[in-house]
Image 1 (cartoon, rainbow, N blue to C red):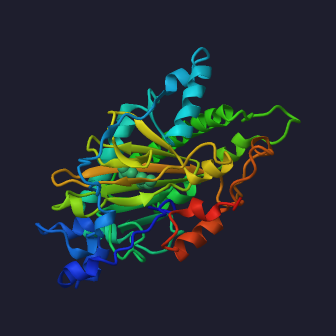
Image 2 (image 1 turned 120 degrees about the vertical axis):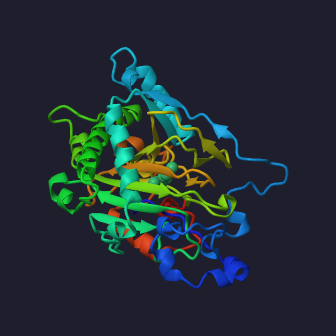
Image 3 (image 1 turned 90 degrees about the vertical axis):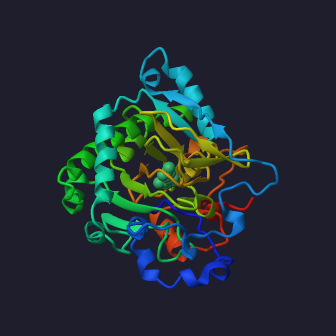
Amino acid sequence: MSPAMLAMTDGEANDVLHDNDDNDESLYQKGVRHLCEKPISKVPGKYILPIEERPLPTKPNSGRAPLISLPVVDFSELMSPSGRSATLVSLAKACENYGFFQLVNHGIPSGVIAGMIDGSTRFFEQPYEERAKYMSSDMTSPVRCGTSFNQSKDRVFCWRDFLKLTCRPMAQVLPHWPHSPADFREVASTYAQETNRLFLELMEAVLQSLGLKPRPLEGEGGSIMKQFEEGSQLMVVNCYPPCPEPDLTLGMPPHSDYGFLTLLLQDQVQGLQIQHREDWVTVEPIHGSFIVNVGDHLEIFSNGRYKSVLHRVLVNATRSRMSVATLHSLPYSCTIRPPPELVDEANPRRYMDTDFASFLKYISSCEPKKKNFLESRKLVT
Ligand code: OGA
Ligand code: NI
């Protein structure tokens, strides 16, 4: 995705299989929706992964990936004086053992959520020319449409189109956001504000669950929460059209997200898989809930205690799928490092200090043999 998308696919085996399909690079650059405007019955070679990277398990007799019920965190319990401490314990366990949880009773009105999914669906239903207005390879642009994962580098493309919106400071970025469909700015900015508010509450709980004081008293040191209030937020709207041969490709390759937390909204169509105990497991959507996951910055900040876990997206033959991810972090200018309370002799520092510039450098150099950005920040011990 965004800055968030890390692991890159490497499709050496591909060209041999389907070289005669691959004569229209500029068509693929226009995205999967555009490609599928004329019905197609085969996946072009450009999207076909080498066998070992395809979604089906390659171990004999292992069948389809199992479904997983992620740990559930009840936000209303987290906000209640009687439920908070027990919920902080479940939150900590989920971040340590899964890197993911489902957030229920989050308090964002269902109309805001339905409006976002509906507005996004209508955005992608527009003619290609509407999306083309926002296509750009400039990573710093506040609005960007594109396809695949890192479309200027990927040899094999993913079956995904996206719209990425920088969300803060809202007053500055909003005039750049798409003005068609007519209500898009309104639904998307309301959604961005609501998810940011939810992120701040969750982040305060995460800091507390790590034994930190999110809002120390006057004279006790700086407030970390103040920095998060001024933090960055990137919204990624993902569109995965139906795919004629879903076993040959992926909607998104294995990657981790770069920020502190990602709040993911998905529609009713399954597709997200996470890596759990070395296997790929499919996450079952719970209607109206958010999937929340730990990003690289939180793994670095927690000095390895909370895990940023690889995940990927499957596509399917019959149903189009939409998802909206919001990635939240500190301001782009901040250095991410663990606070002194989380480092001692028993827990020496595991990662180098990290800033946004080092991340951008990583994705533009894109060393293909490194699994992800986090890996590249590890201190050798
Ligand atoms: C992402 C992501 C998952 C999905 O946008 O980073 O992992 O289900 N999305 O679309
Ligand atoms: Ni992701």
